[in-house]
Length: 290
Ligand SMILES: Nc1ncnc2c1ncn2[C@@H]1O[C@H](COP(=O)(O)OP(=O)(O)O)[C@@H](O)[C@H]1O
Ligand SMILES: [Mg+2]
Image (cartoon, rainbow, N blue to C red; front, side, top):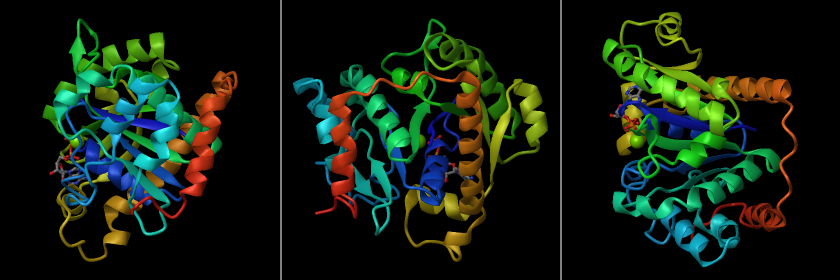
């Protein structure tokens, strides 16, 4: 299954969309909250239930002790998003100041996420936050650049409004160039449209000269629940946002497999340290809460 990174030019629904996709996927799924500006799901959707002992920052600390410690610690830092533990969250930073310490963590984390996607069949979503540029390239502290480079699909989340398109226009060129140079190619980039505003998908694609891979409906009740929790809205499980998110995960899977067939990637070299990741995840099936 693909590793899909979601980014924005300016806050516009990355976290809510990433959560909707993770909750709606038909497969095992994982959301890695890698926004260097800090994670919002802990205090939002999970209402503070994830204790401070879990999450991304602990993996960064582990990674500094030894190269394979991150892979060893990974399964212990996931939080179940459902009873069965089929949907998992790697909760993000609680303090943006921690981001500076993550430079070395991103490549190791990316490798683990790809093992999970390719060998355990997980739909992996990455909340990579807002794109920040530095001399035309991805900012090394304010973005999780290595994770974005290595993603199978990078989706720029936009709304169908003039304001959203105006800002998105400026990050498309630099993102394409980065993915061509350090990633799997410029065509890893596509758009995820949130249907807010007058512009239709074909107009958005034309304006930004980038394909719209999927669209999510404007659904304030469900989005608000995913952002702030509280009581789920009536018919939440069959809400427009979750139903379209489910369709979107299929569209991503199809697009990623088309790309990998075209590109014929050489198989990733098997890293023995990573073999244990899968085993520990299987042992942990049913959740890690405790
Ligand atoms: N599909 C949607 N329909 C309605 N509101 C949405 C949708 N997606 C996001 N929102 C709202 O937009 C705001 C920003 O969303 P969020 O996911 O936190 O953005 P980001 O992670 O890009 O900063 C939140 O109030 C959220 O509820
Ligand atoms: Mg966010």
